[in-house]
Image 1 (cartoon, rainbow over the protein chains, first blue to last red):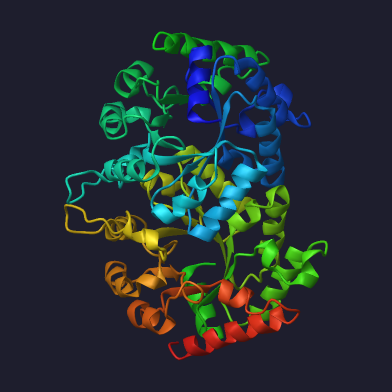
Image 2 (tube, rainbow over the protein chains, first blue to last red):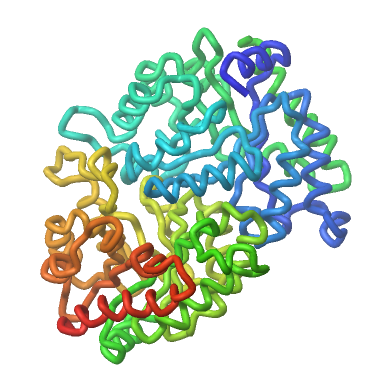
Length: 267
Length: 267
């Protein structure tokens, strides 16, 4: 899905919600826990209940890797179940030397059929280039994250007067443009979103951290929206675990609907 | 495997070689390519041929993830085949917010039975803490890598007068000590190894980049050795692809033996 298609979907559905499928098998409703393919059934039900209210799904690969080979199969099944009018993000935070990053690109873009992957910038441009070299796929690079640890290195001040995350944004924006590159920008640091928006006026930002992590949608929108919307705001736990009972899908729908309602005012 | 056991193995075998199993199914010998379980057979033969000449194996997870669920099974089979007197490293370069990093720790330490995992420090302490919280397992954090891209962000100068990678080493060394923490220190930047050794005098360094990537073992040793050796030097392609013919295992043995010979003078 290219940038103009993504913007068209946002305008049509009046939402820029990304639903995060951070599915922990221990946290799905009791009646699914011991069911064969219970995790798959859970994910499918969440997708069915929310697909008209979001434009993207983000699979947190760690939760599936923790299930071994079966988890990898599950990711493939879930990606193929997500409708093609939703951007399919593998939240994998990869990044390695060139020949290794090419292998990751194969794993996620070719095999799992993800549209996008999250990447760590620490190792530099040549760890990111192999992903950007794949046509019609997105790289979503960590800029400023939503955890407390973002203070430890991301916000360190450089001799140039910039913070590390600002330099990451500047350098990558100038190198790769906006058609296949997004940034991860944490919602819990919402004052900093405005700073990053100035540095990357036409980029899409993937914003985690609303809901369970405490971020505020209004503040994210006020600081991050651009003329093309330019935001994908992710909520995971507050949607997928909105209820731990048999009504989990309805509850997920309602939680997503509430966010979509708020988003619709900005579109 | 704890630090004292690792040092004992190094002294007993007179080697601090780590063999990197970056196995690309397209690059294994022809007679194995179309054989069922050819990749597994290749890895087992490499391990059999080199296990007395090294103290560690490093599985580059990307090469297995590119094979989907079967690749994940393969990693499990290979880790279980590696003798227990060798440190089993998952070169995965992970790192995410706390509850996600815990899932990665489960995936690699509990399920795959790796002794160690490589991590990216970008997201800060709370992305690393969950790995260090697992007893008797190692976290190997990227400090200065062996690729050209290490110039892009890792070497940026901070207002404190340090470079980013120096700050990463200082902060993590002081927070986590040396019993369960190593650093990735690229051999192609061997002059910088001395700098990092001063910052982390008692840490083990995992040093990739000799062989195919151009690093020089002598220079690495002169700059990086400490009184406990303190080095695991990795070679991947120069060993596992030493021959593309039916004699690949013998050639791998010979390539590893040559490195082990050189290492023995330092032990």
